[in-house]
Length: 260
Ligand SMILES: [Mn+2]
Image 1 (cartoon, rainbow, N blue to C red):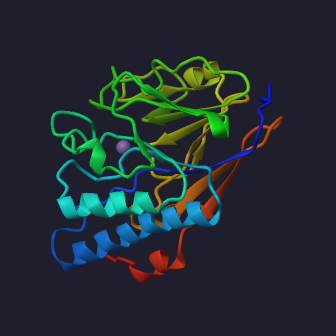
Image 2: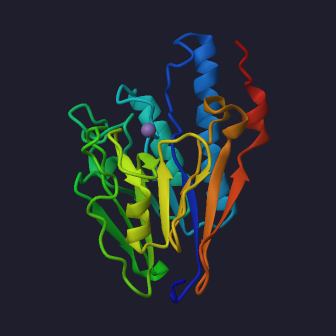
Image 3: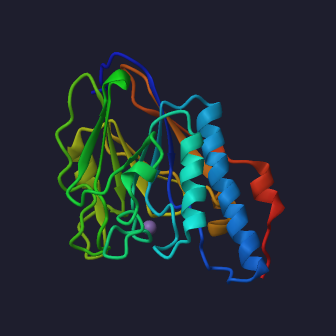
């Protein structure tokens, strides 16, 4: 059943930016790569602002690792602060909230005022009464088969948009792979939208009336022509959530093409 809520809601959904990757080494070539990824993330913020998103969702692996300079961390937080809407974010397996967590070391006072960073391993529900929206996620501590990104998901509430964040691997059936998200879990959620991260290319794994998507990485260099996208999800009362892919800037796509 499509949900009846008081208002329309627009989400922009990104994940797997992998800022500060050393994939291309630590020299000038690596710096060019890292700068291109930074521009991709800045463009995600631009898309959210330009398109009038009500919420921006960052579904894990914003950073490629927990070995991040203060400068790089501040870059990312300054970009988030540019967003003219609340931002809800969870860690992923690359920036896991473990004993080396970069997020644990940061004073909440230093985080942007619009950032809702979910660090509770058991899950946190962030409520936006003005938007008639509730967003739930849990912090990934250990990327293992025991970790279930959707475990503990609260019951959906009528007259609200119920949105889940989950960083892990979608599977049709039970598996012994790490951080599994099963079709049955999505189907049983009763949620309107489940924003997924971990897989770097777009994927629609919707189940029944619950729309569930991988947005894919906004950084084209991680996924070739399949990278360079964000998702825009529009929640319209009485309808299933409408999802479209938005290409991020041509400047990012064309400026730094790596061959070999
Ligand atoms: Mn991941």
